[in-house]
Image: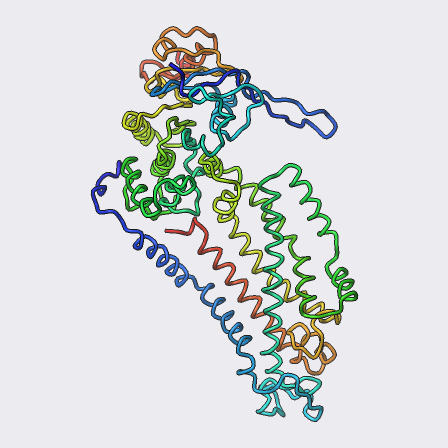
Length: 271
Length: 303
């Protein structure tokens, strides 16, 4: 079975100047990453801040050119596809719903933008389509004509999801889709994402800080550390028997909501 | 919190949607005092300029030295036929003020348009593409900033001769620096937003990203600078006319009227005061309108 999305030795480095007269230094953000994403699967990608998760997501979306290595979509190298064709099959959901929606556009304009750019369907059906997407994403139709700043964070993220899914993509790259939302809304958005996945047969790459989210949703988890995938394993196995040192420290860093245990540094003080 | 309550409602037709938006914009405009005041004052001045031949009581070029420097209506020894008095050549001041509005407005608006187009194209290009293109455009901006406007205008006028077209072109090609600088930094800010990434991930071509994602988010800066530059251009025309480089007599422009009145500042100050007040009112009206448009169009003021 060929994976729907596959990267081979993907590398990306940035050149940063360190001073007026010193030579530019290379900062390797992603260092030879090979992951496979199978249809209908959820691949969780975890790792600390700055380890290259978002750069990897950007490369998959075509927003960032890889320095080395290649990406395959359905076995076809992505370089052969134009950004336009790729867009119809891979779509993003960004972290911050406050900056991912153009504040000058109404919700209906935001949701139908992919349809307008790709000229999908007739223009008189776009409005209908937007309303169907809003129903699907649990957003009341009366917000059709609202501007993003009139909506709450959760509602904005629903708009972003509607925009990502309106073209019926096969793969959705969720770059920390809930980390900017408050806790009560997080679970709603995650449940919505899972419902939509089952309904539309989507494949997710789920980038998250939150290990509980990944454990709950992902079929497979890739652990990233300093631009490298250090462990790529079935979720159950990764959480029960972590192999890599970094994965273990990552799992140990999770606070367990158990009142019999105190906060890590408080514990000593009470002893 | 899921809002599925009214999902079974009928679909909202397109016409209702569009009319809602227009109605909302009108409501916001009519609730904004400074737009109403600035807009109506500007409308009166524009109306005055357009219908100058019908409104002016006398021919603005008609000289008569026997009735020179008649004072305006609030002073003594006035002639009721000459409401705002006459200038040093005996021309009706009110008629010259009305005709002068034509030229001052034309210079202000045309210059702001021309320099606005040049400046925003350069600024948005530099801000969006960055890198080498940015370096080149920044160099051009710096070059422009280091040229003194009056000196360049002097040289050009000496070469081609002073005329309305020359003034508009010279000012239009010199006053774009503020647009370019502000649009560049506003664009740099906007292009790093996620909605631009989202548009790129959708597959929008670059022109479409610039026009429909970046431009609407920087256009409020453009409006504010444009109103400022209208006023700036009118004042610069006044100083160019004052130096004898702008609009050539006997054409009336408010700047030229101030320039011509400078000899009478001491004993007949109203010769300068009247066009001066007209100019301040115009500049104030344009600025109020610009501020108001910025407020109304800002997304954070929508509710």
